[in-house]
Image 1 (cartoon, rainbow, N blue to C red):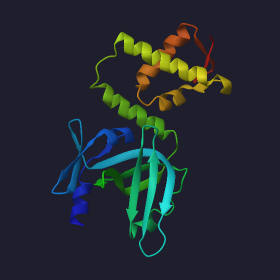
Image 2: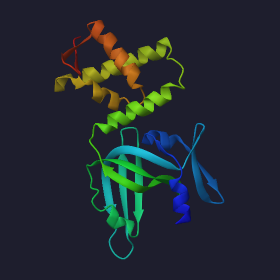
Image 3: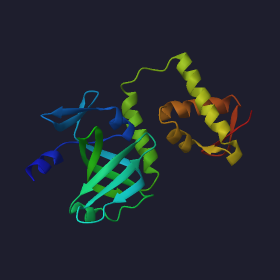
Image 4: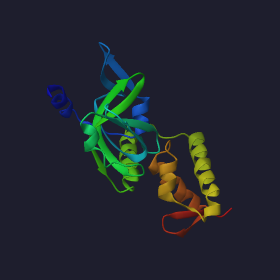
Length: 209
């Protein structure tokens, strides 16, 4: 219990799963101590994602594994013993916010959840906007060649959606996980001004060609 209380004093960092996956697990005396990510030492996290898979054990040994996906990567939630009943209502297909403690075992970083709460799917976009805004504070502006590459990627995404009658800008932001939302919006605005794409309705774009 003392150990659990100690974990609860740590900040639950709002992150995307992709951030966790590139972090470095720090092991002290064969035990996971924290995840090193930039200048942060992370023990607890606050993640928004979709439950894409669930496994529940049968027999005496009680455990449940949930696969969480937020578009930037996937990470497992692992629940053992009496906590299995606590999270029994979580099913595949739900969008959830997860607050929990990071663990690392057998070369896998996973989350031991404290809270799993159903959320509106729009929070996936909200979380991306939150985390990208934080990242932009510490990022140098893009060079000319990078901007051209970004523009080509956005335009390719819009062209590929033509058979579906276009694509929502929110979906472009969620799909292009490696590009800042601010830059995506900036480049979409330029493409509209240049007459390369158009808006059949607010928030949706199509390729003009």
